[in-house]
Image (cartoon, rainbow, N blue to C red):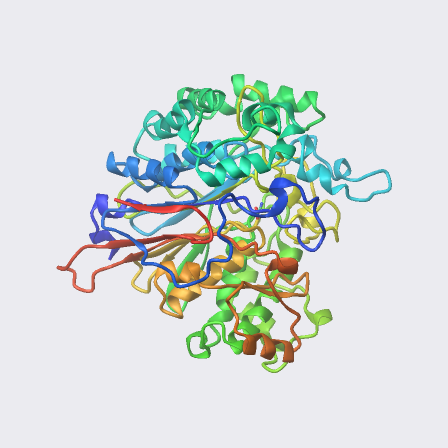
Length: 605
Ligand code: GLY
């Protein structure tokens, strides 16, 4: 049982997943720089045999950048718990991973306490008070997508700082000074630019040049001067911003100098965020969305993220079939999972929204019988005709509008799973002058107009329309899994826009159904279907030719890569906890893996 584990061994599980990949969906994006969909350093075609997972006995941090993982492990070494490590990693990512690590964005955190209770912190961005749907429509009522993608209208009120500090205040053991020290050091003293970041900043020159502060901080002044690998990248103003947060807590970001800088720049440039929006922002503690899968307990993020609901639905459907016997990525498995994904994403589009503003039928959607009924039209020989795959009708009656909940504890056995984002790589591409940090373009995750898909090709209904104070629907799926004995088993999540959900789902299945170790489960090739477009996508080297042939024979439009051959798959960051069969034997061990498609690192203690 997890209770047997010592504070050092067990309060140390942490996973932080940074999201930042950009998809165009099937609607073309401008083909400039960072909207290419690739995270710096992506090795997108790496699906070969996986090396052995990182191994440790006293805890582990897995994140998108080694320096950020090391910042977390530094907290563990000081005796901090998983939340301390998560917060240190989160702030460090804001320095070393400007693509997606952030203080100008938002995210979701799932925390498992040592005794097994699970809670979540929603620190999703919020629409500013001046945000209405009209802001994103032209005079004819057509959606002007660029307004929600780039520049000052694209940003929601950032939530990351509030979320990280709420977690630290309520569940951490170390003080702000300690947990923020690595981030401040990395910003003030700089760090040698890795090849991936140097190249990516150079590639993004045109994006940054459009905004003078972005040009000032993240270019060398003109396109002929480029960053070189190994040169020190110092971010003095970002260091000062972090110091204000360290000294004043939440007020050091949402009030005072940083808030003034942010609000003034937004107001001067036609943006919506003002000082009051910042002052009023709060991270919200919510119940997790939980389901069982073959005896395992799976806890993930509830609305306004669609991630937890969708993962529960996918698992509930998968549980109805002997996936292990059907075989990893066999044509019958892919056929069944593809049909499941179509139905789940149709539900996502119809039913998901901000639970503080619209009724979301979470309980109805995650009931086991609901997916049984949804899969009743499944035909093992043939795809269900597209026109008949629509959202289902979950039970609404007993659904509560009030989902806020607090469960506070502080001891060993803790696990934290965080997904954080600016939305696109470098978000809106706007940096706050004097603050040194990128702002998000999360307003694009709202439905600008029913029928108009977002960057990831995801559509929605009026439940997810822009409205003041509303949080936009997300796919982020930070997840924690417990084994049938109630012991901590796995911490997993991924970036990747609309593929976040299917990535997280497939990694869980790879471990539980196919018995893969965490490294293999993460590196294994994936499939994806999101209802619209009507394409079953697969990753290179994932489906043998006879499987794609069999799928086509069943009526599937099958395509390699997501959306027209572009390989944009989430880079999962996960760890698996192994418990000794013999209670007197060696203690718990941690096995971690940072997706070989990216450049992150699992660092153990
Ligand atoms: N911005 C991507 C998501 O939240 O799903």
